[in-house]
Length: 401
Image 1 (cartoon, one colour):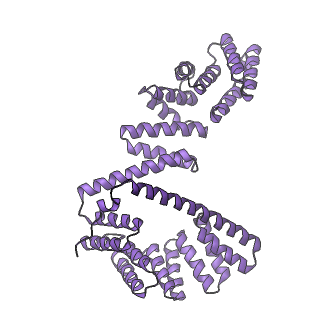
Image 2 (cartoon, helix red, strand yellow):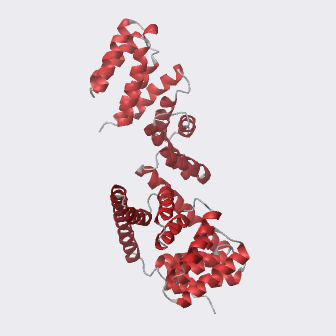
C-alpha cells in the first residue's frame, strides 16, 4: 500500500519543480510534467522513468533525486533510497525531507548517524505525517539510549501536533507508564517505609477497590508525616466513597477536609469536597457557598462549574445554572454528566434543539467511556489470571495499629 504522506510529498515537490520554468529547459520541464502526472495517477514506473530522463538532462536536479529516493523508500529499498538522498544533500544541504528519509533509512541500517539527521529535520519539517514518523523514530532512539528527558520532550510535541493519532497516543502512554513504574520502584527502594510510599500503596488499593485497606494506609501516611500535602483530601475522598449516605462517614470526611484547610491552606478541590458533603446533607445554600468559593479560587475548575450549575438548578435558578453548566462543558468536553445536566436544563427552559444536541453528546460520551471501562476490566482479569496472586499483595500490607 502506498504511503499517503509520501505521495503528497512527491506531488508537492514535482509541482515546485514544475514552477521553476526559468531555470530548466523545455525538455526537462516536459519530463517533470509527465512525472507529476504519473505520480498523481499512481503510475510509479512511468514516474521513475520520467525522473531518470530528467537526470539524464540535468544530473544535479535535486527534486528528481529526491523523488527517486522516495520511490525506492516506498518499495522498501532503503539502500537505493539512501544513495539518492545523499546526492540531494550534496546539492542542497539541510533539505529537511531528504534528511528525514535518509535518517529513517540509516536507522534501519543501524547507522548511528541516523539520530543526527532525524534531529536536524524534526523541527524543520512542515508535513505533519512525515514529522510524526520522524518523531516516533526519535522517541525510540532516545528511549533505547536511556535519554528519557528527550523522549518525553519529543512525545509531548507529537501529542500537540496530532492529539488523536493512535501511534502517538500509544507511544505516550507506554513511555509515561514506564516512567511511573520506574519512579515507583525507586521510591520503594529508597524510602519503603515513608509516608509517600504509604500514599502510593493507598492509591493502588483505591484502584483495586479495597477502600478499607486504602484508608488504613492513608492514615498511616498521615501519621508518618502530618504535614504531607494532599493526604487528608485523598483520605476524605476514600472515607466518603466507602458509603456516601452514611452520616458518620460524611462527618469524618468533613473533619479531614477542614483539617487540610488548616494545615495546607484552602483550595478549590477542598471546597468542592465540602460542597459535595453539603449536598449529601441536603444543605443546598451551604453547598452553593462552597462551590462558589471553589470557583473564586479556580474559575477554570470544571468541578466547581458543574457543581454550581447542579446546585443552582436544584435551587430553581435555571438561567444562572445554565451559565455554569455551559462553562463546565467548555472546560471538560468529555464530561458526559455536564452535557446531561445541561440537556435537562435546556429542556426545562424550552431550548429543545440545544437539549437534543447535549443529550446526544452525553449518550455518545458515556457509551464510549463504558466501552473503555469494559476493555480495562477485561485487561485486568487477564492480567490477574496470569499471576499467582493479586499484584497489590506484593506491595501492600495492613499497617500496624
